[in-house]
Length: 511
Image 1: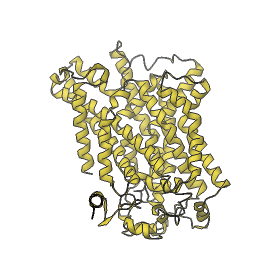
Image 2: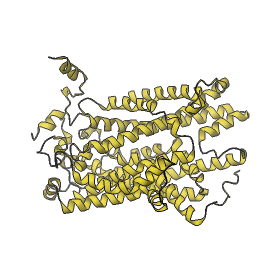
Image 3: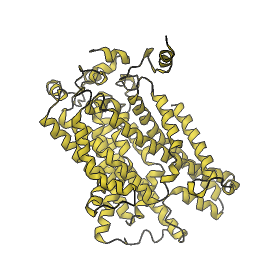
Image 4: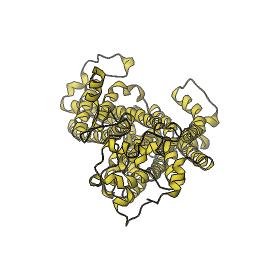
């Protein structure tokens, strides 16, 4: 046995005693019956945990920096998260019915080999969001340490000013990073409230639209990877209604607190820029030296640290499944979690978190690529396949799979994705590079990036499948319906998922 063969056997993922294959390991197979135990309460709690963190806090107050007044910002948050809730609810139905995750369902849409593209897109945004939330958590750690040891705030900075980093933040970043890695391993108001918008009606309208798009864009990664969590549902309705109703309500509540605090700080610190970041507020509060300030800063910082740990688990865990979907033979869910964690250091998030506008631009810009992906997924399940999926064929890497399409790639999905992305690229480029200018019309189109991409790609995908139907569509026409039925047993919904099946057995079942 050669060295490379021995190395391959050493690093391969073990699947119940069997070696994982190129297309399957235990983490991306349909979820066994005993693990499908999430109820409506679980999904309500999960949705709330996704909002109760620093980025949720800053969403509304940072919109005010765009020129909106407080109530307009709240309406924008509500509409944005209502759209996100609707999309998440519908995007989760397929996985809640068949108990499959995002990488597996991507093969149904894009083909066995084509699925690598949307999974890779999702992984990239996972890296960015994990780095962002880790940095926010590090800022809370700075405030917590300062509350315990005030001299920490006066520590000499060994980093150049151009780096956007301080010694305190670097130490706190490393501490928070290590903490979340351990968690992963273990399994009177001021004038802001009363002020009028400084924008004219046209600019105000487009700022409002951009704010809605930023709200949706901020959770676009969570929308597209809904299958990674909805697969745990006992039945589709357990995940559907909590995401539909809870998401807009809890996010408006959290954003309201952020706006109220920013308004109060504008009155207390009139000479300071708008304090949209709660860590800046805590730091200013400590600097005043009022009685009890250190104790208050400690407990508030601790609450935000816990919130950041929660939201990063919601980033790392789905991201680890996605990495496992890229290389099932070598990356397990746990190995994927370590890779996502390491990416938080490599990305240096302090560079793209310097202002409210930069933060919102980052959120909205990436929705250009994920909105079309979500649209294709939703239209595929409800309009193209009629809610019928061939589960075993998702794990077959040959022509016997109805999801093989052409050389393992569904060209219809790629064509539809481009139809939704290309018109938005000029606005995306101009947003990322401020030296590039585009027409007002293209900028306004980009302000609706996620919604436009979702509808254009979804409708285009549906049309292409009607014009040139693949074998998967022909199979779905003849297959029995597995749409939600409260009287149906789990065996009727996913017969293959209730048995202890290894990755090799699934792949060889129809070879």
